[in-house]
Length: 125
Image (cartoon, rainbow, N blue to C red; front, top):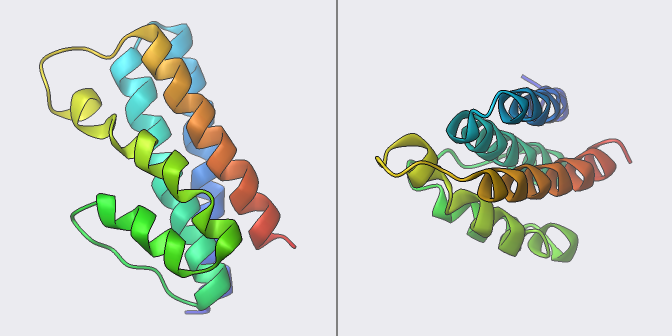
């Protein structure tokens, strides 16, 4: 399949998940909101990497995703710290017994939205 087409498909997913995160936030479902934000960030990374290099890595260790962004150029690399901060919320939202707070969920959605906005600009340019 065409990497640019796949990049756009990841971009579509990256757009959809922050919207779901906002709905979850409105319902006081902070773990779900954060989890959706994380999925969006990962899809934004995939869209960027596919658009710029024609490939993306699918590792079990999502921390490698930020490293991958750094490798594909300065603009993408500048997003790596945002993705790293977002990915740090994944375990708490999805696996730990301690719930995510509203402020943490809001921050995760903001980070995912920033990543999506840059991904959209890169992929559609």
